[in-house]
Amino acid sequence: MIARCRAKSWIVQLSQDDTDRNNNATVRLPGQQRGTKGHVVVYPQRPSDLLDVLPPTVEESCSPICIVFIGSSKPSKAWLKKNAQPLIVRRERVRRALLWLKEHNHLYRHIFIDHHALDAYPSNDILPAHIEALNSDAEEVLTSQYDPTSRNRAQSDIHMVILTFNQLRAAAIKHIKTRKGGFLTIAHGHEPANEFFNPELFPMIYPTLYPCGRRIVA
Image (cartoon, rainbow, N blue to C red; front, side, top):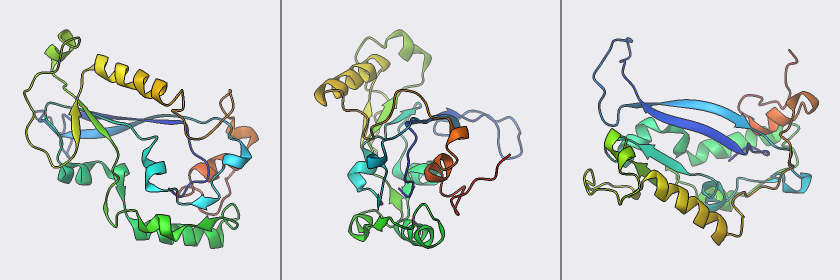
């Protein structure tokens, strides 16, 4: 929400954890998970598409987000607020961060802070992104071509949809065709960007890591 340049994809995997805080072996329980970050892929963006008005609207922030939860039971909203930290938005922290960056970061001096769009964000809650749920049981792989079973469909306080792998693939293809291929909100080039030749690339993507807009050359 505060970055002027965005990565095309950020892979995050939620997997069950089998150790406690003291690294002692424990029994794996439903919903006991940890997040593992993957690779970041960056493509050159057209200068006209760089974000000069921040933050984007709630709809623009949620449109490129797709969350797939893999587990034997649905996560509650309380569980997501406790464990899925990247989904939580604190509106006033975003406001303070943008004001600070505009004053101290040369890459942000000319931006316009859209307080009206910012006021639409939750004060301390999860973004209204769509969440898909996949069952992690082994037998689900054997029956992935059939309709999902009705088990583990307890009431939840968040919007969830139980889908198989084939259904997810079909939904993705339908999404692309419905939007006529428009599944990427920011135009970019054909080749991945090389940060070695663009020292301002990472500071625009990760303003929290480079708050002053400068990288330290290794």
